[in-house]
Image 1 (cartoon, rainbow, N blue to C red):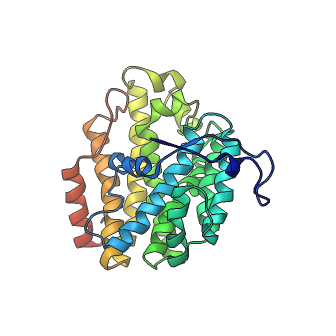
Image 2: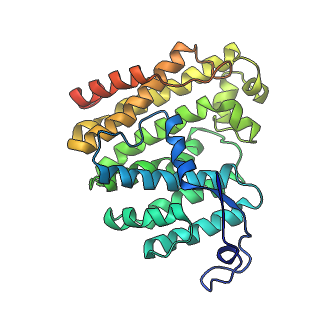
Image 3: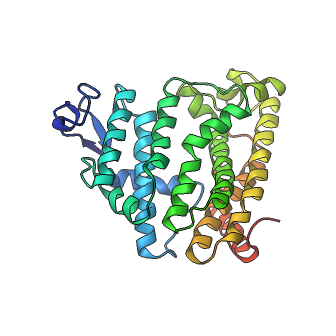
Length: 302
């Protein structure tokens, strides 16, 4: 389940790596990282996609989950571990990475011309999470999503050779919406980790406090708050779904799947009465497939 990092990769013996920036520890194996795809709200790399595209999407997903593990779950000094991951990411671009998930990333970043500055943002988002535990307002939440979510969509567009400025802007709307939905699903889990991603001013407006986030079931006030945030995410998905119509072929299939997963998650919240505390809110495969087919046919949400 976990991979012990070679001591020499973390001991500072590498002349390019700062002395003492991390100590030996453990990281999940690549197979364990990829297994998490089954719990996502959307199809990460559908089997209908060509094998080469799926390999690139798997490599990216493994990297994203590795960084999330370092920032959310890893024991010990997470800042130091994130520093090491950034160092190994740079090595991945040279083909000399030490960590298997980073080694798998090398063909993807070179063949798809993904800038390192895009992937580094995920590491920076997790560094931020170590020290910033609350969002004062929606603007701060958007700033967080710009680091933690939007680079994911931009990387996917690079895989399909469509990382164009206007398309990236639409992708950002989709990715931010998906991130907001995930935060709503994980209210209690995030609170237990000491973090609240719901904007503080929205909580105050709906009369919610932190204890509402860990109650056995959602209060009327919390349901109203969740409904508001989910509706905001739905509007962003609708606006960003124009991207589906701007794409063709396998790129259209993949992006339609991501939007479909988001819309199916919105429907799951509605079915649960916007209560993510009583039970896990997750999209049904049937609803995701229906939304996926509709988006591909219509080229977006009207």
